[in-house]
Amino acid sequence: MGGGTILIPALTLFAGVEQHVAQATNLIAFLPMAALSLSVHKKRGLLGFDGVGFIIIPAVIFSVLGGFAASFLPGAVLKKLFGAFLVLLGVRGLMKLKIRS
Image (cartoon, rainbow, N blue to C red; front, side, top):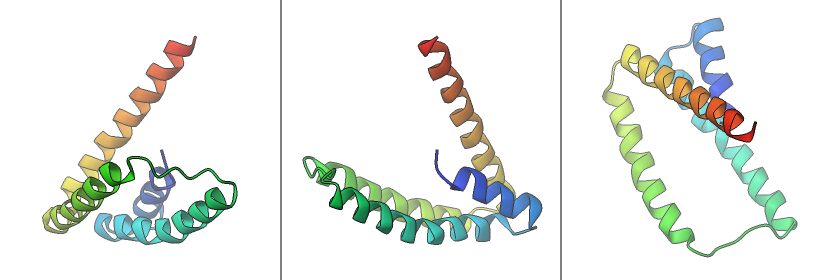
């Protein structure tokens, strides 16, 4: 879970921002946070590069494809898909709690 699980609902529910704009805002806000995190992890020697190509290449491809798909979907569909994503995250979190108990 990341900040988007809070930022996107906050923008759409409390600020009245359209779903497309909220999701784009979240992606733009992610960039400086990711750069800062990368810098901190590098300084602490916590970066590993083994197998990074197997992660980065598909991530870039599917991010671009997802961005294009989202640009064509109506805001109502994006809201439902994001809501389903949040429900799945919640269920996954509950399952992890149950397993630890």
